[in-house]
Length: 166
Image (cartoon, rainbow, N blue to C red; front, side, top):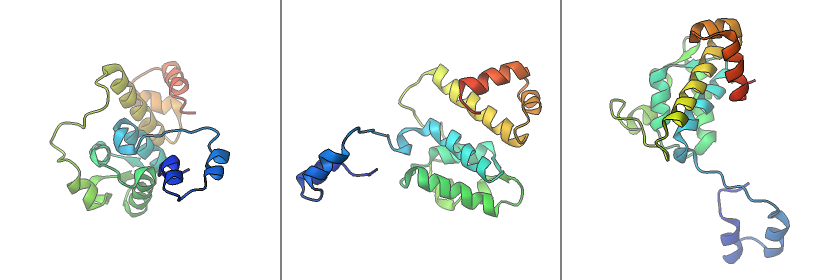
């Protein structure tokens, strides 16, 4: 894996051409996290779950508005740090670094623009985030999570399968 273009490295003499062709079996381009703002909330919730914490809505909003120059690793480190210093099991704005809460777009401004204005896609991202948060708050108890979400257990199971959350 590399954050550099290997073909450019070959042209500049920084990577041997024979090594490039040996390694270049299948290339995968993964856009930077700043280009996938919808994924920030899902990833942040995932990292928080690993530390048995949840993230409040304002903190998620601030996280999704930050440009993430360090990409996913930076997000993971921020959540780990916040999980360590949070007084309860909920990460708030107070636990986030100042550059995320002040350097990101002001919290009262509109949400960041996405590559798509699709309401169904945005709704799915929010629904997945809510399910993830409910499962984290109930420590995986699906009956309690369904009650929190005000949906049936069967509906929750279907959504968990749809979003591949299990």
